[in-house]
Length: 471
Image (cartoon, rainbow, N blue to C red; front, side, top):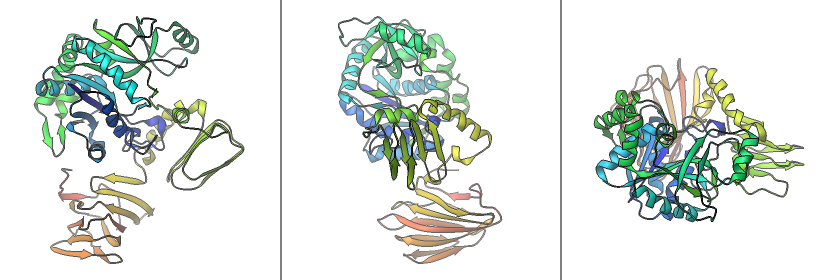
């Protein structure tokens, strides 16, 4: 049996302003109707004999990950919460420990949550090929058959036969990102492949090799699993034990050191969507070479990617640009400079700009809220609560709130009094009053919240009860 392990801990900073720390690219619908995480799971249909999905993510994404997996009826083995990002080797080790205990002899398929593969059938054939090598104790990686002399990827050299036969070949070496001339030589040789970050191996085989080369990771991960505890849909690893693990990738910790590494060539329309230029590459373009998403109008524009999310975006006389609009930020960059978006985001973080962390719309396990307007002593939010869900029982020390129901039915508790509010009805919550909001209907509840007071920060929430296990 193959147990898929999906690594969903990335932040996707090169796709800012659409991808943000609390809503990264793997949780966005960038290619089709489904999110990248959902597409990764649905792709497994082309892979025979797969078991329940294990997903490793961080604390702040947990409810979004769970909701997206449930939306597509995923058979979930475990959603594992990393207390802190420690790179891919510890994440895979934790999953391997759990899988080896529950499914002895099972093979793990390690998949990043944010890759695009346009030919799932070819992917399924490559996995089936790699499974044979993994069952014999090999540690398999999938090398992307290169189409261009790409300088943004690491490469893997393998002893591949020229007859094009799909098989697992011995890995000769891993090499870092090359310069342009070196990449051209790699492409011409036929021996080098892009490093995909997709792996296949038995859980026990991975742990044995990791124990041989970086035993500290295995020790820390075993302890973090031993002290882990269940929390709703999630498995919470022990914080101190997991954070004691060295931070290392599967490549550096194991694959570059083991004598058991094998490579299966993968030619399946793969793209890691690592920058805005990649989205220009993978989307269908118009006759002028443009990709237009959302409400976009152009004149004399060529070879551009223009993405509008909240308003009309117009462009005149442009060539080779990336333009991305969100409700609170706009990015304009040349297609050749999009890798530098990460540096821009780092500068925004140093300036403590909220635009790197959250969108104007913030998602919660009960629904979402969007800040419509704010000033020093007031804030206006549009709140949406999913049917059957409820906010925590809470109070505020510094602000009062006024709720106006726009759509749906609200069950409201203020101190010891409960009431039902319908469209166009409202209520007032004084400073310090214990209160809760619940959607008592079968359709989404929408309301406007007006806050007023001396301090309006999100940390002025004292939770007294919470069905989602939040502090």
